[in-house]
Length: 263
Length: 265
Image 1 (tube, rainbow over the protein chains, first blue to last red):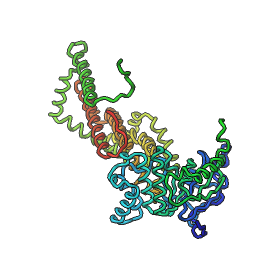
Image 2: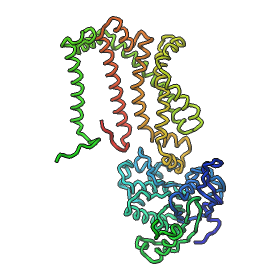
Image 3: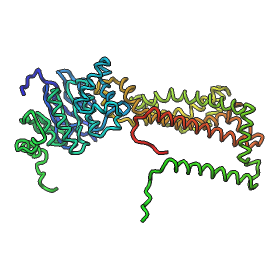
Image 4: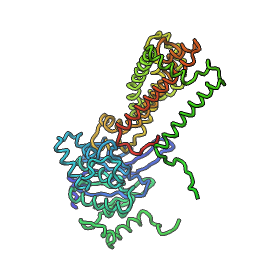
């Protein structure tokens, strides 16, 4: 992928995040992290729990702020959340009092689309996630995987510049998880949305990403930036190919150098 | 081998209702026995039939309707006032720490003050007009309500609010379109509980400083040792409380069909 500086979407420059700053209990969660996300990239940030990857994403969303450094989108400093950065959470965040279609329309209504436009966009994304039949259901009637699919549709319907995903498949069973990974690849190839995807699952990161940032904990740092040189069209068989396994193992080696030894 | 009985086992609705009816019948039976057998002087314990006939007599002479109407008026006004002020303040306290610091500790303190002790003070300030009774109901419920509404609002997850934000909602939109709908079922349960308390404080107010109302009718009956009228007054208040509670319950079920998880009872 060419990296024209004009295509730079999100730039993280020298971020520190310190909790309880200035107190005895001060704790540095993120230490001098810099990273660049270009247009149309599918960037995965992988790391063990406690490495600050979720905090990183929340700061990109504008839900939290760095202690030091700056984060920009299209060159403008991020000062709070906005509809240019859609987000999908690990917890189920569909609005339980709204039917599936009204969940997807939530952002569209705020953007003042006409009724007809709302309807058209909503059904386009319901079709993409394959849940047209469930348009009139309340979230409580959906399974965990279906809820996350609607959450993805709701975020995409807003047509964000960047889609931020915080371990969205972390609570799903293995089969549903791989189905969702296929769906995500499919959506990304069709829509070419810029995606930043947080996960602790190395396989997931390699399978989904065009680029993977490896983070290590205490304090959270970027350990490596890896361009994933795998074909555009990906199916689950790819996970068994030598090329895939090689990348996966090299990341595993970085995160857990002694993983073969029993502690 | 018989299966073990585990905690919180479900039960058929019919069986639940039958047991509930038996409980009522049991109390009524004990009461009838105690009054009929002559074990207790009938001046102190009227029989159920005497209470029922007193009930119809009071309906016929119009006193019951009048007293009930004025009591309902007082409780409604006091409770509405507490709700109209308490709910927004509680929500704002949950949203803004400054607001919380301003109100929550103060409410914590005042709610431990004995409400009946405010009665003489309010009489000095406001006389024995309607407003002083309304204020007693208000004082009894408002401070508690603010604290409970804060809890209800806090129970809405940060991620749900964040979802609203990342879909483009401002603070105001997030409060009205995310926080309030999300907390609404809990809030209604809170109001349902508070109105029960409101009845207690209403009677406190009417016992001390009134010449109308259900509480006053109980006090008046005591002066003439009319225990049947006392019993009737207490039962009518209990019944009114039960009716309000049922109405709230029906309203909650109607308003929130989307709510997850069913509740027993």
